[in-house]
Length: 211
Image (tube, rainbow, N blue to C red; front, top):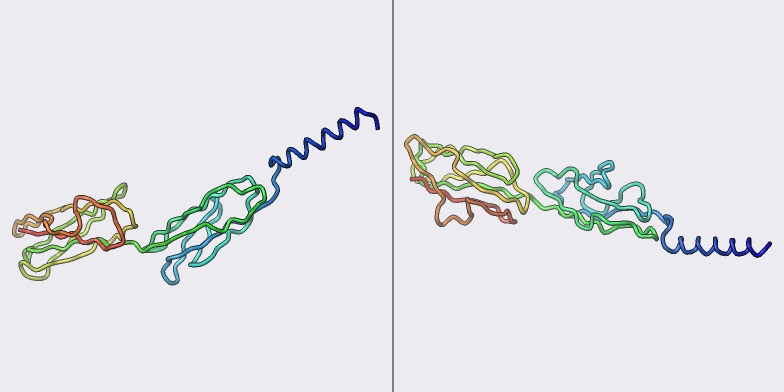
């Protein structure tokens, strides 16, 4: 072998080694999985990775079928929430390392949605007052609270929608009572704000007084 061919062979070997060390090609594939917690008994949450087919997952460990090549990204999202709960994903996205190490730390935590309602005092027995529940970037959920007691009785009721943690809400009077005419306003002692608030883990009741 002449000197030129030897030099060419050595150079090609060195270049290949350098490219391999720098991640010039995929070295391995990795599975994507993690853990779901907080679901109600018998419930599942639907998850997908990189827009693929959704899987229904109960509480416990899960792993998506198939693998992701080293250097490629993954992105796990909730595609369908369980009834009455909201699930949030942490550590759900990243890039597979060169060794193709399996990802098993995707965390999906589910919490119960919070009921929201009103308490009305001083409403005449023949009257009805209607409230709006206003959700940020969502349609109104409207409910009417008929009274079946006597004047000055306290009437309570919940909206049909339960709210995920962190939801921004407001409650307004949609229609004041008219038979007889009364005006209902938020009580100064109400534990929850009607003008707006953020849902936490405590059920929300806004107190109104009618005069």
